[in-house]
Length: 152
Image (cartoon, rainbow, N blue to C red; front, side, top):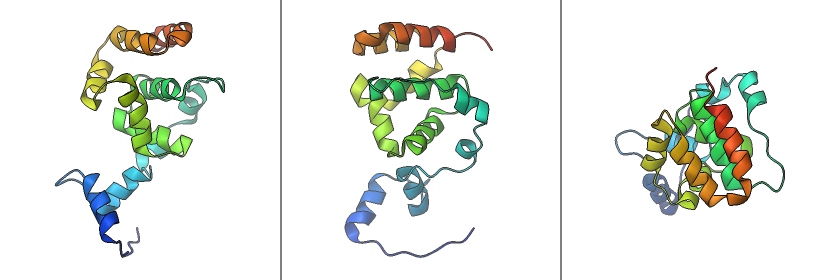
């Protein structure tokens, strides 16, 4: 892999620092997150997984669709929530933080609370949360969770 030196102004540097995990991230890894440039797991997601992603009509709430895709990737494709979020950002061509906002801010939850909901064997609490937030899509949500909880 080739590496290049770039200059950034103070505002950009501060922005990178704000989005870095101390002792873990480099400026390059922060840019990869922000730009949704991911390595192996996202690029190696098999074609069947892509074909099996849930489909949504044009009027379907974006926050709900992104949340359901994230759940699908975590529960059916065994990606971490973070990798699933990166994948969604990549296919939607949006920022990683934008995707996180769809399933945190709009649902009134912190990331660790979303992780807790995903870790549960029974996803009924997550399902109930989505049904309350998106009552017009209750049937779709119910069908989605019935499918997601079926054993392979």
